Length: 89
Length: 87
Image (cartoon, rainbow over all chains, first blue to last red; front, side, top):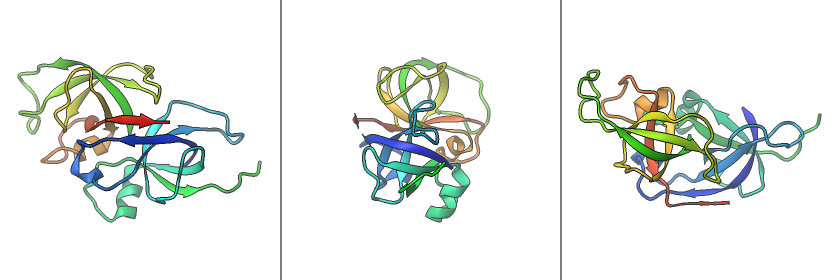
């Protein structure tokens, strides 16, 4: 998993049916000091509680997503799986 | 998944079984500000995207899952037309 900062939301009306009803967030990977590292990408929000500026834990692997959502056919690769309270380094 | 801007089309008469009838588009991956973030790539279109559209894509094995029937040899698929990115 990776630490990311939520930048905002993505609205898409026309989309693959697998994404129906799922929240799409744009997230920015960050390092352990919360400095940006790499390019922003899109993740679905399974916690349903992540909002802009939140530090979150993102799973970037499709098999894990399919296990969590219990559907072996989902074309989804990245998912917010936790809202981070604290990082100690 | 990631954002991209459709910049062109690819016509490919002979292609692998399962890809018949699938549209191929050239997509420039972009970040949340619309700035290019890597080299353009060819993606298969699952949502009837057109040139200049802002889209989101899924890569890797999940791209194949976006198509019917599944497990065609693609590694990038357009799975949504983006209306807005609010940051």
